Image (cartoon, rainbow over all chains, first blue to last red; front, side, top):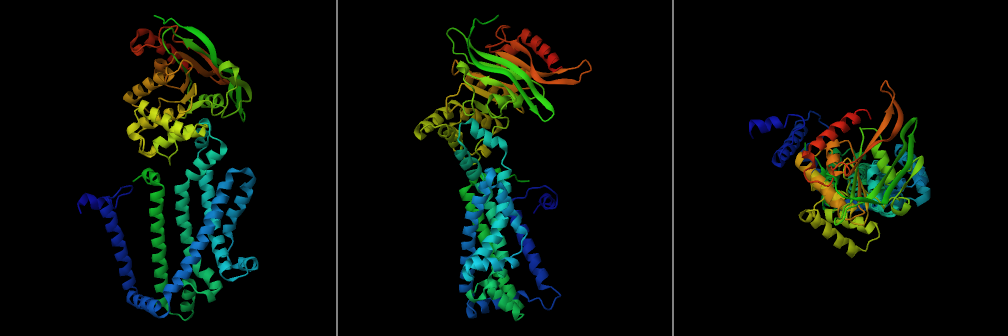
Length: 264
Length: 273
């Protein structure tokens, strides 16, 4: 690497080539692993212990089926979140629904703990309860971000369609729905991450049905930290994989979004 | 030397248009009309330049003429006295907004479909305009892939998909290099002359470019007290008939001494607006 290239990675507002970007990622991963290996905390399991625990969880404790249970739950809740949140976000263009959407946005300040009881009454508990809680948790954040995206559409875009002679429904479709699709997919990526972050709490409510959230709580109860970290690592990798997949999907469905990104 | 021409029907009439925003009187009884300029043996559209300094209310007036905003008082009527309504007037906004998620071709097709044109007809019209505006090789591009000049051409073409005789342009000359400016001026004249009734209203503060393309210049400005303080909303402070002065419809008009003289006069007046 030339001196100029090295200098470039330390100067503000500079673009780097893909090879350098990959090198930087590798550097930071290696640095993190090194910090982990050299950690002075005796209670923190080593990478080798975590790796062994992962093998034991996979082969002896049936982690595969638990993962499938969790993935099914996340995807189910994500689907409901998309439907609910999109409807609410796009409803902001109608004055009548704006207070309702504003109220839905504010619900993100509520914790899930107090909501378990009313949601149990509404859903009857078990799997539907977990789906409802996860959907509520993700949707309240999704609606907040998406409603903001819709509010920030410049007025000139609506006027532009009006002077073309478009009716309000076509304007809604072209400007609000299609025009913000790439941003909606980005918001969805962020909210899928919220879903993974909430999974332990939600699956802990009804452990009988399993899932990695229940598994992690069971291991934590017995202070099996290597197992806990192994599950966390799997959740992290799954989340990253899902995030990457959604990024690829965004680029496929909305190739224009990539063109508009400015490289600094 | 003045071209032989006569005035025909009223194509646009702005009558006593006023607009107040909060405590500020933005427009104050703005009044003017555009008539069909008839030249024997030539298809001549109308190009009217509205000159005024920044912040005087030019864009507000444009939005009212396009029926995007309602004035507090006054009316805007088109041919045969029909009230102008949104969707019947083309507007090329300053930053050339396009549908960012649609290709150039689809941007044009949607402009037709939105206006009730059958899909096949819209596709055909889009193809014609892509050829006419030298955009055929950019048909599959997204707006983000276009240069400023290409984007402007698409924005103008988009307004021409459905037949509209009145086209409003907000600051079409701003931020252009000399070559692009020349190209836009030619394009405006070309579009105006596609139809005898075509009328292009250019809202700008670029005096020289407006003089070069227009047949009529209107000066929009506010009254000032002897101390130079603004005392009214904007209204039409002056009108120049460039046809009458022999400064319209000529290829090398900018090289004429009379052009330079008038430009100097208008610049002097512009400072008082």
